[in-house]
Length: 331
Ligand SMILES: NC(=O)c1ccc[n+]([C@@H]2O[C@H](COP(=O)([O-])OP(=O)(O)OC[C@H]3O[C@@H](n4cnc5c(N)ncnc54)[C@H](OP(=O)(O)O)[C@@H]3O)[C@@H](O)[C@H]2O)c1
Image (cartoon, rainbow, N blue to C red; front, side):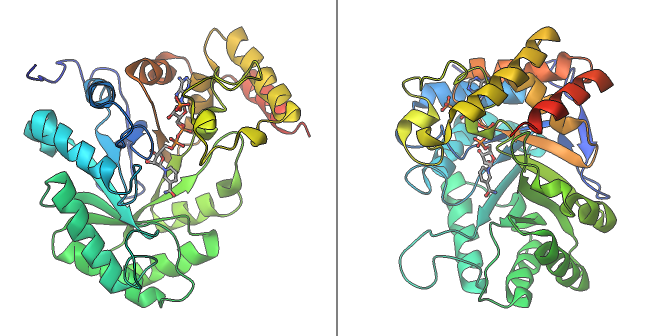
């Protein structure tokens, strides 16, 4: 069926300015790390992507290696673009990245100019795009000079293959250096993509202060701790088909009795406020205006809808934030 975007798509979503740039991002963005690979079902993930756009999610985040297999999420997204979303390209912010192992030999990993340039060209081909909006270096490279990696990002922006440059998984010290190099090249760093959730708060220790000083935004990945901060694992069993059941990035063994106690205590706070744990986890991130966008994953339109319910709720009260803090400090 031919897709027509929902008429009310800008009615509910709020948009936050990304640092001091001219770009605004939706408070919730959709990532395609999981759920858009060859083992996933086209009609399901197409439904998720289109429901997201209909709800005002203008930002879709990819990387060269998302799948599995690597590259398949970009191919899948290219198919959705071609079939449905290309007429709306100017309403969309599409990002991709390079930095992890992508092809054999010395030029398919880390941070050389050779790798970043070739990888973005391949990503554009897979998605059928002429440019992406944001191109990230996916992780710091201890061997390549920062000037080379940041120089490649700056040149890619000058060539028009990406409109903005970003970095991901750089700690605060590495970020400060990378941002200074980018600035000296006339291409300020737009955004940092960092892991952040109620279960992982490392950005509070210096990174957010740096980004504020530098005028860069922050987009928070794995905000639901890959599904732990949802109703899914609260009973202690691992539902079939869930990320923890598939083996890989979320180890079933990490779901310990101590963690379950914490998750259930958080869920009690969410329930008392009349919402769900996933919505509360998203609202909790949005309490800090320096967090530009919450970058969720969703394996179905129903999960997406539950997560979007965060936007319809009143902000967390001081009492709720205190109760959450007490739980998060539990051993
Ligand atoms: N820069 C980086 O190094 C990096 C690293 C990781 C991720 N990212 C980006 O961040 C994005 C999001 O990461 P993430 O997928 O880990 O985010 P997440 O939002 O923490 O976890 C998403 C997963 O949780 C489960 N889930 C989500 N909503 C749910 C709900 N309402 N009820 C039950 N289960 C629910 C689903 O897994 P199941 O249904 O499969 O269990 C879903 O795939 C990625 O797609 C990627 O764009 C970036």
